Image (cartoon, rainbow, N blue to C red; front, side, top):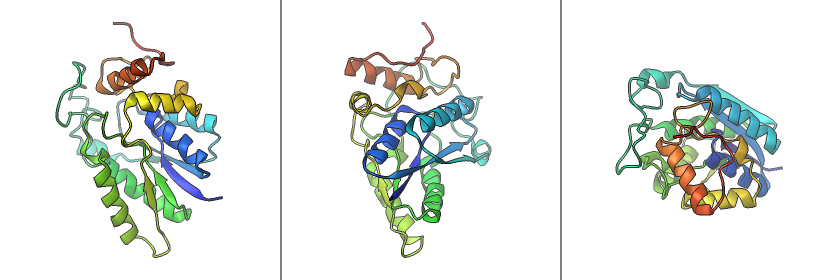
Length: 222
């Protein structure tokens, strides 16, 4: 069976991405990164529960403590506030410098080890927080660099099945494919009940609202 490595945070986008990889006939190898993010414990729980629900056997949980030394992001540095006032233009303070580039590099090493054909990442360009490392063109260039820097027989395709979708389209697609959305976690700052105010919660809630469906996870009441 052909193999694909999937970067699986435990969020809605990466969960649907893993489901799509399975639908395309791949045996999924799931990778999760603990990098000192505020909701690290809750995201890891979501990763394990989503992996169980999808029947994913091969899993990697990798510790990347150096992100805390770098800081420069409200997801990691607790002296910086996670914005809760609504979505704004520009690159937000929750952007983690070059995070996806680092994730893709590590995922590529695992893909090469397992002789995987594809690497799936759930980046979303159009309806996202404006992160530069979620752009289609950037991931394409990373694919070129990865294939230049690996063995000749390693020819990885980086798949971005959600990159041009809106959050509403992602919700609809996830429901159609029966992805376990109730197991997912998207909130940037809370681990018990989602805050409902951070950019990630707002994008998620807007997606469900536009799709005409109720989000199955619990939120704080405001």
